[in-house]
Length: 153
Length: 241
Image (tube, rainbow over all chains, first blue to last red; front, side):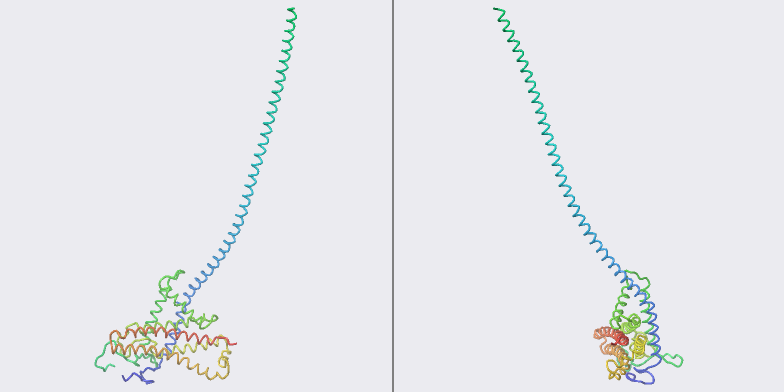
C-alpha cells in the first residue's frame, strides 16, 4: 500500500488539496440556492399555511364553542322562565275554573231555591183557593141543608 | 492491496488515489464530482417529485419532505434562535441534506462495481476537499451572520466576557473549521476503510453489523455537522448584554 498515507504528496494522497475544494464550495452554495427555491420555500409555505389554517380553525372553533355556551345558558334561562310562566298560567287556569265552578254552583243553587220558593208559593195559593172554594161550597151546602130542614117542618 | 494473492473483487481498496480531471491549469478529483452529482441529482429528483403537487393533506413523498423540513427548522431554530433562523435555515438544511445523502450514498450504493481508470467512487465526504469546503463555508457564514446582524459590534464577542478570552477566541476561528472538516472526513473515511478491510478479510456476514454501524455514524455525522454549523451561526448572532 504505497499510497495509503501519502500526506501532502505532490500527486495523490489523502490530503491532496486542489481545485476540488473551491469548486465543491461553489457547488454547495449553488445547491443551497436551488434547494431554497425548490424545497425550503415551497414546503415552508405549505407547512406554514397549514399551521395558520389549523390555528385559525382552532381559534374559530373556540369562539364558536364560547358562543354556543353563551346561547346555551341564555336558552336555559329562557326555558326556566317559560316553565315558571307555564306553571303560573296553569295555576291561574285552575283557579279560574274553580271560580267558575263555584259561581255556576251558586247560580244553580240560587235558581233552584227560587224555583222551589215559587213552586211552594203557587202550591200555597192554590191550596188557599181550594180551601176557600171548599169553604164556600160547605157554606152553601150548610145553607141548603138548613133551608130543607126548615121547609120540612 | 492488489499485490495480495487472494483479492476479492469488491474489496479492493485504493486510498488516496484520485481520478484527475484537468480543467485549464487546475486539477480536480473527478470521482468526487461524479458521485456528488449523482447524489445531488437523486436529492433534487426526490425534492421535485415531492413538491410537484403539494396539498394541505400531504401524500406520499410530500410527507417525507415536510418531515425533513420540520426537522431542519427545529434544528435551526433551537441553535440559531427565533430571530434569524429563517435566513440560515436553507444553508443549514442544505449542509445536512448534502452530507446525509453523501454519507449514505457512499455507504449504500455499490460504487465499487464501476471501474475507474484511477481511484474509486465513494462518499464525496470521504474526500478532504469536500469537508474543508463545507467547513470553510460554515466559517464564512458565521462571520457573515455576525457582521450583518451586529455590524462591527460582532467583534465584542472576542472580548466577551473578558479580554483574556481574545487569543482563545481567535484560535477558535481556526479550530472550528479544522475540527468540523476533520471530524466528518475522518469518520466517513474510517467507516469506508473499516468496511473495506473487513470485507477483504471476512467477506461474509461479519461486515454487515459494521455496515449498519457505518450507516448510523453517517447519519449522526450529518446531524453533528449541521448542528455545529447552526450553533456557530447562533453564537455569532447572539446578543451579549
